[in-house]
Image 1 (cartoon, helix red, strand yellow):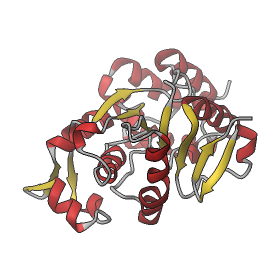
Image 2 (cartoon, one colour):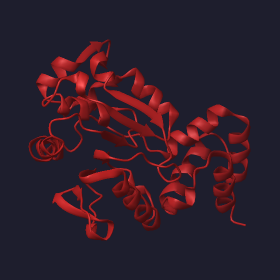
Image 3 (cartoon, helix red, strand yellow):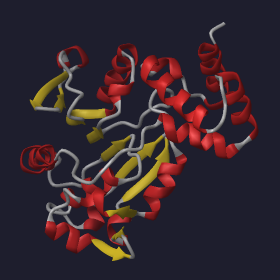
Length: 260
């Protein structure tokens, strides 16, 4: 048996993560680079080390979940969210607080950006965002809320002054913003989703999955939205056949749930 296939089976038994649903060439290349850096020469030895050492398991999870993020990433899309999508969702919800989910939230930049954008429409105490990720290390870092300056390059000046404090060479996000976000561990492919969301944001993650996995996830995300709710994806993740999943394009990279 191919040692990578065996590794995927062992990892699924140990963690519940099905690596087969990720694009094989990308994932294999990333994991080989990791095990070589750690001093191993094959997947069998790498898995034995994962079994024995929680730190190596954490490194594996960190590598496979691609924790690359920044605030207001692809800023023009956030402008569309603020100027077009949110006003409609707020009107549709009769002014009541929106139910919002940041899926695969990495180290927190995305849900905290959502909170800052929503603060233009409502007080922080009315904002509640669920943020989930597979990587507990990323979630821990998100809860700390400490970021290098490069993560803040796209943050509007007024928001940077209002919601960040310089601590040494890092920027600490405001405690009131942190209170708006609840972080949880979640495996998108294996775990059930909550429902009745007004807005789901899942950006720059789906590109790593196979077409079969994406097909499964689009259906799960649609089921998790209210009718008229919006699914916001990353700038390389356009859905070319949205109606197949009961979505209609509301703007580029924004998809509205429709009912048949």
